[in-house]
Structure formats: structure tokens, C-alpha cells
Image (cartoon, rainbow, N blue to C red; front, side, top):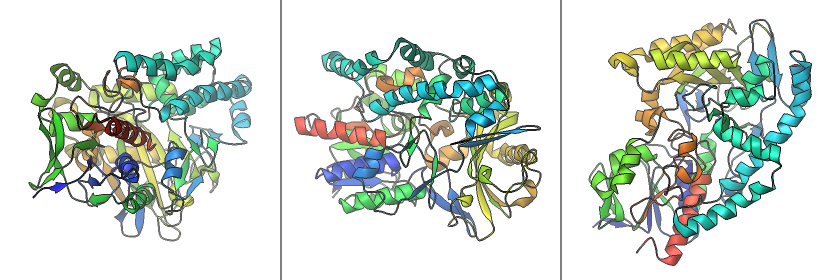
Length: 528
């Protein structure tokens, strides 16, 4: 006889765990089906070489919602997050730029006094706009119809309190390129490179692409230990977050099945009735919430015949592919940068190898034409400088987050055929700035876009479950009319990063989906 639950969650990533926690806290019998042999989805810590552990896919924390962390008592369940000593370090050919508390203005002044003077106003303006994102993060976007219009008015009303300049910049961020937005504030390449880097993280696009300015804003609306816009490290790696979440969920009665790969969502008379696993087992529930992305859910797990034709057509055009290539390396020593000798706070920063917006644009155009650029964009973090649990004494681990790499290669090539070659290129890119880097590598773990898809279910290797563009944001994420987490099959919900407010380790989509589910359950909609 099939196992019966009140709700089944597809995928044990952080948002799936959050949804499960809130539903179980409300008294529902909840089960999570996780395809891998470890809970956490792409937010995990794994050993990739003897004695060396690192965050496998997601690699840094800032966007995790305080409400979620508080409700789940993540601190009491062992989660500790520490701030980076510097936000960013940008090595250049013969110089460098450090960005962080107490140093940014004097550092930028070495390149432009005008830019240094503009920093305060820029930070203040961006903070006002980021507050709008924070305000909306834990709200369910409006649907269509009269209720949707009422929700639209309620959520949009506070924006009328912004000044004309703030309203202009908010509109600009959603519609213009990151370059256009930053050119309105700064003149020197280094500061525009550091700030503009956020616009292409997980975004297969150029900083010249219209709408790329929003992606910049998306990456600054977080906070760490009360410091807005800061980035930090979870002691034990990103898996410490999902480990604490899993503990919180289990305490509320959630059951978590590992190596339970869902083959299809079972739908009867237009209603979700549970799932069938690849091993043939059937799990029944009137509520199914998918932490898997929209592309995976609706192209592989839901029979197209069960979907309205217009929705199915929209899903055919749903854009995925973040242009991401991820590596982890075990190091015998810290990298020694040519432009800044010795060990220091810069080793604990996000080390950006992309000296200008032009460099980033060329990386994208190269990748579009050939699959990858001869000069890729790399952000390197060395979390072992902040966390001695990740590597043996005197050794280190580094995360290499790399852009731009096409989800599909031209001329019928496979990422399996070129992944080692591309990994060598990335290593050489870092070594050009830190000559000892290549020879210090003990082991490496490679995740091409295809690896990310196969291992984590990220279609096209998309770390955000779908492009973060204006047509796939807020009430239109994943498509207009279903931004409220309710899919066009009764009882089927979207709770992962393919829902509002999008990618990153936030917990917000999971929180909001649970809120929608409990609301529908209260009014009887999910069972209607």
C-alpha cells in the first residue's frame, strides 16, 4: 500500500527543507524526496580529497533570511556564520583594489578622488533600493484577477514613498545594463569592476545586457550578522546551513528520504496526488511542492498533457543557463599574489579576477561564440582562512566560481570532452596573478554546466533555477500568473529558486511557498 502524507517535497535543498519545516510546524505530515545520498541539494559540504572539504556548489552566504534562520533556530542547531575580513580583493596587472569596511574610500581614491567622493551617496542609494527588495522577499507575489490587483497595490504602495531620484534608479536597475547604471556614478574601471561583478554572477550575460543592473541589486540585499550587504562564511561550509535546517525539520516530524529520485508527479483529474519514484514506489499526498526548478519539473516530471497549453508553451521558453563553471581545489599553501605579497585579509575576501567591465563583456561574447572565453571571469574564495575545519593544518581549500561558460557548446561538443582543458585554463587564469597557485594544487573537483545539471538537477547548469531577467522575476517567476507559488495543477506548488525572489541561499521561496500552501489548506483550495 502506498505511503500516505499530507505533503511531499521534491528535493531536499535548502528551500525544500524550509517549506517542509513550516508545513510540519503547522501540523502536517511531510516527507522530502531527495535524489542524492546527502541532504542539502546544491547547498552542501563534501570531502573532495582526503582531509579536504568544501562547499560543493553554493559557496558563500549573505542572502539567508533572518526570519527563516530565527524560526528554524539555526544557531541553536549548530550554525555559525562569520563575516569576511574584506568584501573583495581585485588584483590588477600592476596594482589592486581592496573593498571592505574602513578601506574602500581610501582604496578607490588611489584611482579616482571623484569616485571616492561618490561612494557614500551610491551606497546610501543602493541601500534604499535594497530595502525594497528585502521588504518584498518574504511576500507572496500577486497573481492575476482582483485579488492579484489588490496584492499588487499593497506590495507596490511603499515604493511611492521613494524620492523621484530613487524611483528613477529603481526603474533603471530593472531595465538598464549594469554598465549604464555604474557609469552614472563612477569613472574608474576598478570600482566598476568590483561592483559590476555582482551583475554577472549566475547570469549568462554581459554587464552591457539590459536588465543586468537588477542582478547587481539582487546580490546586495542580504546581510551577515546584522551588517547589511555583507558576505560571510558558514563554519563547516554551506552544508552547515542545510544540516541545521534538516535537524530543525526532523524535530518537527519531517521524514527525509535519501536516494529517492522522483520519476513523475502523479496527477488525477487535474489534481496532484503524490509522486512515483524511479524505483517504482508510490508516495501519496494531496500537496506536492517542488524544490526542483521549473524546467526540470515541467519538462521531465509532469506530463505535458496535464498542463494548460499556454502554460506548457511558456515553460518551453523558460530560460535557463547561468553560465557557471564551479571548481574546488585543495592547496598546499596560500596563493601569493604578485601585486600584494604576503598573507593578509585579502586572502579571506572574494578575490575577483576580472579587472574591468570590458573584460567581463569579452568573456561573455567569447563564450557565446566558442563556448567559453580565453580569459574567463573567476571569483576565488579561500574559506579555510576563516574555518580550520575544512583542511589539514597548514593546508587550504579554495572555491573557484567561474563565468562565462555556455550551457551548450557549439558544433556538437560535450562538456565531458573539454572539462579538464577548461579547468586548466581557469587554473592558469588565477596563476597569472598568483604564480605559486598552480604548483600548490593537490587535488581539484570540477563541475562543468553539464556536471551541475547531472549532479544537482540544475537544468543547463543554472544555479538560480532560471534566468534572473525582468520577464522571469517577482509575479512573473516562473511565468506571469503563477508567481504566487501555485502551479496550474491543483495541489502542486513551486518552492525553490525558480520562484520569487529567485536564486541564492535565501530560504525565502521555501518560506513563501509554505505560506501559500497553508493559506490554501485553510481555505480548502489545495483539496478542492
